[in-house]
Image 1 (cartoon, rainbow, N blue to C red):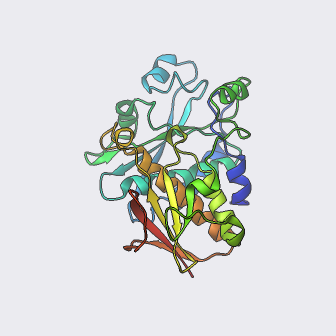
Image 2: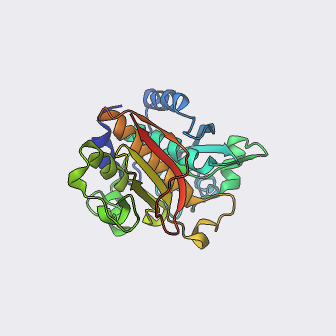
Image 3: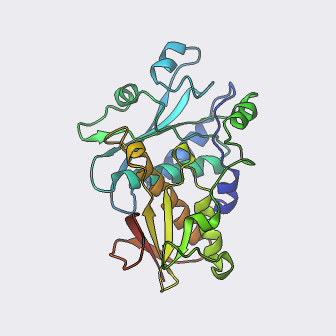
Amino acid sequence: MGSIIDVINKRFSNRAYADRKVEDILKKLLMDYILEHCKGPFGNMVRFAFVEVADGNSSELKKLGTYSMIKGATLYLSGAVKKGKNSMEDFGYCMEAAILKATELGISTCWLGGTLNRSSFSKKMDLGPEEVIPAVTPLGYPGDKSSLIVGLMGMSRGNRNRKSFDELFFERDINNPLNKKDLGKYGSVLEGVRLAPSASNKQPWRVIRDKDKSIFHIYLNEDKIYNNFFKDIKLQNLDIGIAMCHFEITARELGLDGSWETREPVLNSGNLVYIASWSGK
């Protein structure tokens, strides 16, 4: 993958697609990458497949349930994961890695976790009894109307509407915002997290740095009604996985070694839900 910081800044949610097929060589490169990056930090495996609809088959497109939000796309990347502990985080982590690879290859994407017909995608993927499809993404190239649609939905690269740094990242206490100037390379890591996509742009992650300045704890600031709307599909836990993906791949690009682990941090985190910790080396 090229500079991940550049890729993160380049990625945007595209909702209108051109009448142009994704080349077979790019599909192969993307799937080859996915097959090497389909295990999340908690150990859950994610299964991915391309779902393609023949040109002009509007009835098939409508069955996928994405028709009202996505225009022109006939190729989708669909993912499935077995229900279990931290499966949503692992799915978000792996799916976002795939989306960033697609972005690097010049392929446009858009996370879809709420607006899709899961039963239709389930049939296409021959879903197992313990599997769920948390999200899919169209794959293609921006159409003529993409900039207009993206702009109207407030999703353009220049209008990300992200929370400020001091609303998301803290020093040893949820009431003590981190000073970005004191972070060194980790400042760029957390900026990559800040720019991560999330359902309804809620950005539910919060990160607290421990007294050991190479340890960062990631928490969920959960909207319980919103997060439980789809029962087994926890969109905000997916978002945590996306944030973890951005954190790790940016850290590795900058030469910051470390790994994800679970522990019981003794910190004032208020009502946040602890998920995992990055332990730097």
